[in-house]
Image (cartoon, helix red, strand yellow):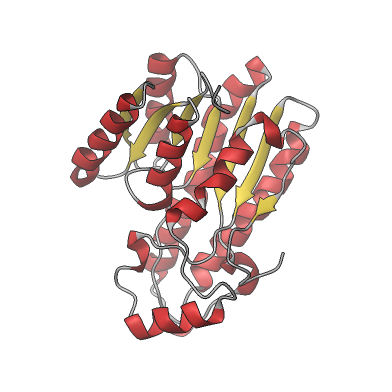
Length: 251
């Protein structure tokens, strides 16, 4: 028996990176998965991922939505609930990253990142909560970052958004109270995802050298935290943050 048998999950930003890895890991544990992607250009890879999930014996669908759009999020949740019947697990994973020192950062850069990383988490969470409350059942997992604790030059907007996600998760957990619903975070360390594609190799070497484990984590080292938080094994984890980071930060 899989840890997530017959559970229905919506994973935002699931077309690549950690989101893709989580989608496949959930399916291997028996979950049916809705793969969210933001842009038309990612349709093909998202449909291919959904097909791969079906090959594991689970239901799957790919659904396009910009999580920063209230209307698109509402439509996405309606479509997924119509197809699956319910959403048991929400993974707020959609996010972007960019770099700029504060004194040079365009307002548009700040607003875009906050809109996707933070507003998107809020909109998706708000959209699924009524169904979870009605059934008194659900898991919400938010993708934060170890940089929420550590900070990073040129990433003030990114670290601020990720820290806010952690705080939001704690407050939401207090609102949920004694319902059979859990909200938690995963705050990964530096991981081998497409987000690193444009990072200078010398910078990556410096990052790698600063990690006690001495390596940048493959996605496979990150996704078990999501599986745990999505399963009943985590039923006593409330408003917590798990950080698979190779020892780079101690929470």
